[in-house]
Amino acid sequence: MKKNMGNADRIIRVVLAVIFAALYFSGTVTGTLGIVLVVLGAVFLLTSLISFCPLYTLVGLNTCPKEQA
Image (cartoon, rainbow, N blue to C red; front, side):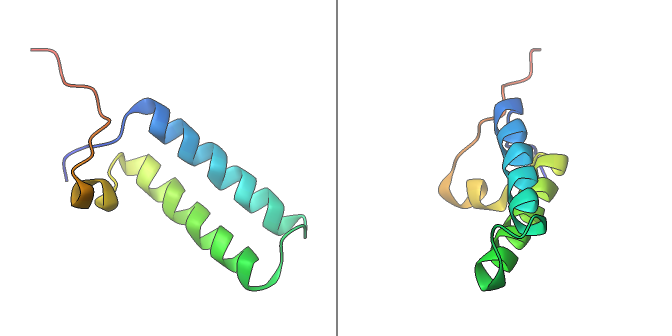
């Protein structure tokens, strides 16, 4: 897998994952919506850790800066 996520995307995804987890575990969001947010947060966290988003590949998006030669 070639990296296709830049640092800004990674930071935003981690922040969103933390917010989703806080909303769920504080009891603010419960039920099906809470579970969906936790799963989405887990996906965001995983993709930010590996710097690869499969959805970006499908739509042809790449926010990773080009490497300097």
